[in-house]
Length: 115
Image (cartoon, rainbow, N blue to C red; front, side, top):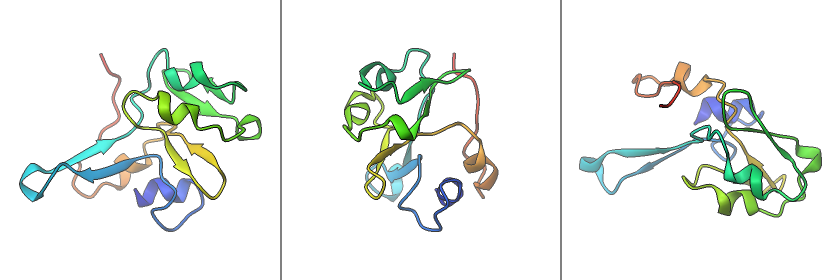
């Protein structure tokens, strides 16, 4: 999450496009919430200003200047992977850069094409 935050120019965890949360206790492990690069992303479909553009290979890219902060993309995401930046009032969208994979000290993250 720190690696992703640095992509947004932040040193903390407040700005990240990946969320790792407890699955309900130490024995149950953790759940990674991140964009699954949908081929037909519902977040882009509901955007009233076309601020979310289809990304080659799946997922979306944010054109921040077009975003009006309506949060429809957050509600539309079926895997709860559109996180929100309260400071800029814009979504934080995973661009599948792989920084989280490179920084993970345990090697539990990977970037792969789904099937």
